[in-house]
Amino acid sequence: MKLAAILLALSLALPTAVLAQHNHGADTPYAGMQERAIKSLSDADIKELRRGGGWGLALPAELNGMPGPAHLLELKDQIPLSQDQIEKVQALFDDMRNAAIPAGERLIAAEAALEAAFSEGAVEETSLRRMLAEAESARTELRFIHLSQHYKTVPFLAPQQIERYNVLRGYADDPCAKVPEGHNPEMYRRHMGCK
Image (cartoon, rainbow, N blue to C red; front, side):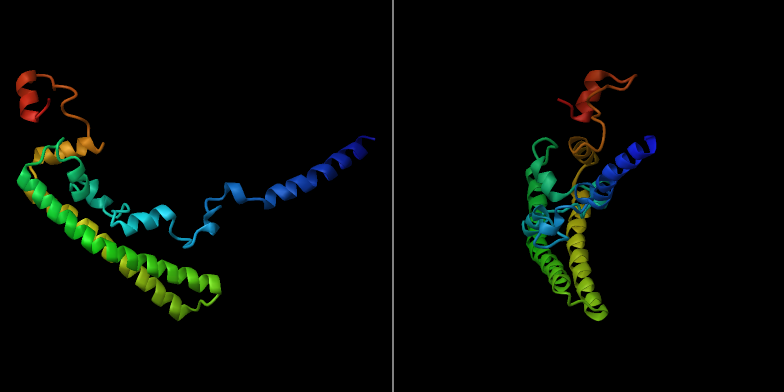
């Protein structure tokens, strides 16, 4: 009788276990992406590229003390930037945006071409290499555009402004939060530009 009960329990549990093993949908990192027009780019990615946004391409500069023009303009009053600095940053930002938008469109088109080739099943080695080269060329150009504007900001910013930028962006501790031991609090705060 025990053996019959065990066999019955196994026969009832087996289909559920088999179904669970084959139903990966919700726990895979790509679930839902099959609905995208371009599988390799989300709608947010496309929007960011079309507006000339950074798309995270300048992180090596941003996270190593080379502020980006877009964020400098957002934080100009808190850093603070002089009018001359604002004009220089604005010129870098305008140049960046004017170059990044067409480069972003080129990347979108290259990814769309890859998407079309795979969805049509029209993929072979030579064309795949050509399409990948085009996509990577567009990505490289876009990355250069963003990274190059970051290093161009450094020469006309004071070290204290870069430090303040890093604090405001959350990359460094706020030196105004605590006066180091042995310093005159009033002099320290004045020197550090604390309010």
